Image (cartoon, rainbow, N blue to C red; front, side, top):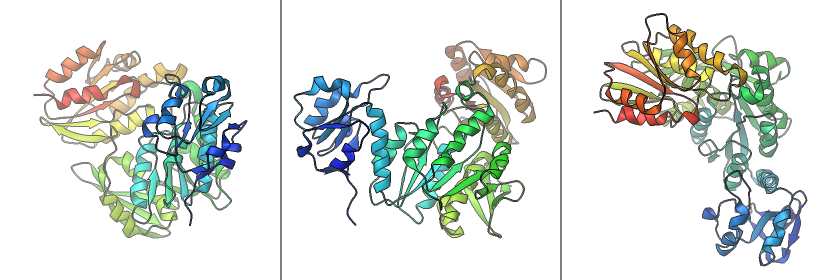
Length: 460
């Protein structure tokens, strides 16, 4: 089987393309938007972003061996001296997506698309690890899940891979519809629907509408959808998606999970019932939220032909995903680093997680949750109920919105303090006597809460 390549015909098929010096290009298996990764024969696509304009690096790309360059038409006058194949298009960002779609169609790999308000990245990592028990796998690196990250992942996939596991994210209407039509998944999974990006998606129905657009771009009639029926909103959508494979811990989904036990370290033994037969898996990752992520991944893996023994074997090789319920120990403390991002649903899940450390004082260090729109203040206040329910002993907050949570907790036995600046919170975390505590640190990406984890890890 010949290796897939982008051909001259493919470049001609880009929307609005005009090609100069076509005879100097034959084909290429390499597409890049970054001159640091350019190799001889690559196609360089000059993307104009908010901070960087790739057109400034066209000549550098040619010097490094690019055999073709894709630029915006309005930049043509700047490159009349380029002696490689020059492709002009109306919008290089759109062209990059089209190249991703072209490459996806050339790959033999089955494509899995994963989206949801929480757990996308962890589920993607778990599924990729499980599938490696049977197949060669390419996956989204880090969380490159937007209009540039999805084609980047596809175009980075080698032609010999069996499976491509893609994470699709969004913060505005239409983004998943766009990336999904590039990915055209054979298997599509939605983890859950939560209060994420409400500033742009308005409400939970808006979030659901955006996430469900993944199901409208499936590769064909035999493609499979996976729905979490523990999620109330997704469960209602079953009427529209009757052929979906269902999974969850409640009711009678097709792939059902049961928590069989949780040890002192917070690690779970999970029972999975598939087609009437149950098997148990010991999870090396922490928390009920990770058990939910594992069940979602296992549902897809089982439908893709993995055996229970392969699921168990893959589970043993799992590692915690960076900044997502990472459990660390230092100076007698258990530190839970969940600093990658935050929304109300993931906050409550994190509280539930540390509540499992029954012999420890429970402390949370919380930063603002972003992109919640007009309901942001109330969403932060509403966390008070989850704080009390999960027996949190101490709450330390920073950020404009988190001040409202601190105020909401003013009556009661919970120790709380709101810090107006990062320096004062940092000094407090460095010097305070927390005793025998488990400390959760969490907030939205822009709050850079990982800096406070480093302070806790550096205590003497």
